Image (cartoon, rainbow, N blue to C red; front, side, top):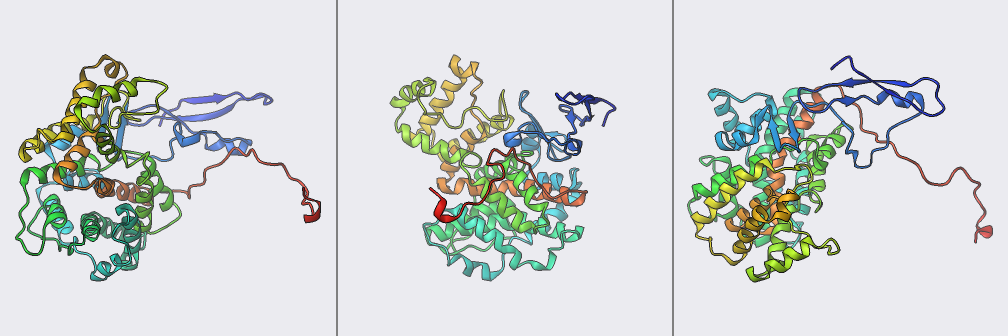
Length: 430
């Protein structure tokens, strides 16, 4: 916070309106406009692109410089030196754990991965061809009816238990969603496996076989979860906070976040990448589609290039590219036709002057989509994987908000409808 002030001059007012200016640890200063309503005004900001809705210590993004920090640590360092559950601890607690704290946290999450047996029956109510995100919205929202012993949001211990349950059970529910779709039996978690190993075991294992998870694929899965763990005040995180501001239970709030993430403008980017690659079809058609992407009058867009937030490069993409190369080599898929299209598009984006000038670099969605395709995860499950990794960010923001003073969210509007008018009798209406 600083002593700087902004002064707003309004036609018709003799004196300007004084507004305080706050400074964060890093990033732009923020003008506090809360006093405007007492003066008869409020701000107009569609999409809230210029509005800070909260104060947070969790994540910082500088899109112009390609910076993403969790608790002050660059995402590249976390991806290369840490793991997903350690990053979860960081987001929930504000500091990295020591060895004892990490072991305790990993043990807690591992021992919460099973879900109530009645949840398996809950799945039977969904059609086998239902979209996985539709199932996840319903099942996660229903968790509050199974775990209502810790739903007092004003009790810090209850909030902690709910956070642990959500982080632990999301991979189990995601895998159950997939198994329901393909008609295979659900797989119980195996407490001898790591978080990401367990997820792949529940996704692709069967009761007929012993757990056998490729360590290269498990590391790749862990990095996908980690790189999607939090991304500041995006649409789904803001939705979780808004739902939470009403006092709703955490499971309902996370279900609201999942519903928001389901939107193609938010969580469907890596799914769109694979759909685009399939539309292109063969390497010899790439130039045709690149030309369409450069044509201002053509609605076609190359998916997975550039980013709404990062105006330079996506700091998660470099890590994901290295992981992508490791996975393709491990699985012997360097010559897969679809992946060949992706590699050629990547080369063009990094060398073509058009893409370089517009800073349309491959982003994290481009590489994560390719990795998941290679692992064998169907495209309609991609957003479910995103939601699984993002759960810790959602619940950390929810916990942070509930732990501090907060108000119920209530955006204003610029009304453009009718002024007051008389109600006409039915026979007089034309």
